[in-house]
Length: 67
Image (cartoon, rainbow, N blue to C red; front, side, top):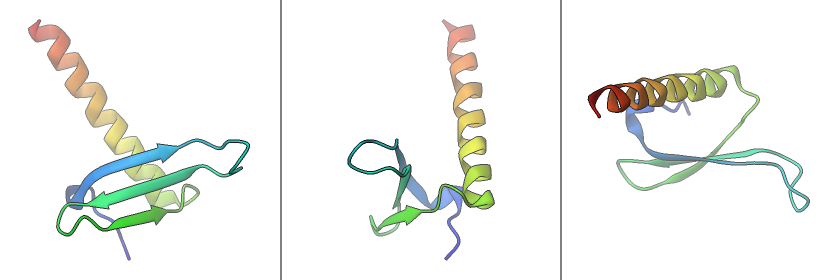
């Protein structure tokens, strides 16, 4: 099922480690709190992460300007 940015409550990225050699991306949905494991290699998920990162970067710059 597709994941839309507006439907996300939270997204967590867990880096690869000795116990798990894969990067894990866990999305928590706003509507029902459901947690979904997302494929970090998916182009759609990579685009989603870029968009979120870009949005955070904009907010950070705005906050710094206002201070």
